[in-house]
Amino acid sequence: MFPSCAGSGRGVAALGFGAAPIGNLYHEVDEAAAIATVRTAFDAGIRYFDTAPHYGFGLSEQRLGRAIQSLPRESFELSTKVGRRLQPVSRGEYVRHGFAGAADFEPVFDYSYDGVMRSFESSLQRLQTDYIDTLLIHDLGRQTHGDAHPHYLQDFLQGGYRAMEALKNQRLIRAIGLGANEWQIGETLLAAVDLDCILLAGRYTLLEQQPCDHFMSLCQQRRVSLIAAAPFNSGILASGTGGEGPWYYNYQPAPPSVIDRVKQLEVICYEFGVPLAAAALQFPVAHPVVSHVLAGFSNNEELLSAVALMNFAIPVAFWEALHQQQLIHPDAPVPSASIKRVAEK
Image (cartoon, rainbow, N blue to C red):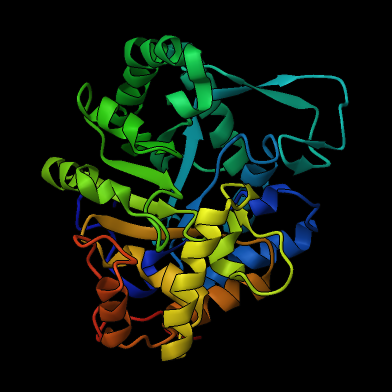
């Protein structure tokens, strides 16, 4: 379980299944293919699945719920999120908030006590489960809310967090966490409340390790485990800089500074014969605070490719070269030659 900084180990247990893509992220995904991908992940040894009401406006949770019905509930860990309620609307554009063919709902931010409770109850129904291992408050922070950030933060501290505590006391959830794209809100919350884990998307990757300056140490001191999500920084660490582009970083075309840094990483990868994507997946879990690296999958091909990349043997000299070239933070731990690999099934 996530409450311990020891996390769920390394190797196969360190690779998590991000279920946003099976909620029709950017394009429609066949229902049967989505369910088959989840079960392929389980067969490959993956034991952590993450979703949210926002992903496909309930579709991701529904599909994941159907997929896990044949699996022993205690054999895997499940996380979902609160902080948005799904408000019925008339049919809108085909693609809304990045999701294709989405259901007739509009996600509305709601960090209140009642909002969190209603969202959680709806998630239980869609996921067809009696409890959630880890409940994450979704997308708090100034990066998401701008000038409205203080308002939403107070709503959560005075209402939503109390709801999550009540759910944990009732044993309907096992851990309380944060899911965000910025580490700063993690520091803010840790100064005010107790958290068991933080899902941090895109901020602790092979490309950027600013959290090493202070945030990772804070998590370690507080015994808060970190789920390193979006290890490819939304694309560029998976695709590299070959071809004509565009190459994506943080869901937008990458700026020249990011492209230049990735090119430097690619030089070292070429020298050692290491796929850039393999290094990107394996790097985060070397940190003792990190319990999982979380990537999104929409089909079996993507899933099995990630399994192979996690299993790729990367020499210690490769990581040493990245340190020598100052391409990773001096305090960032790197995998050893004996890092536990994902076993190919």
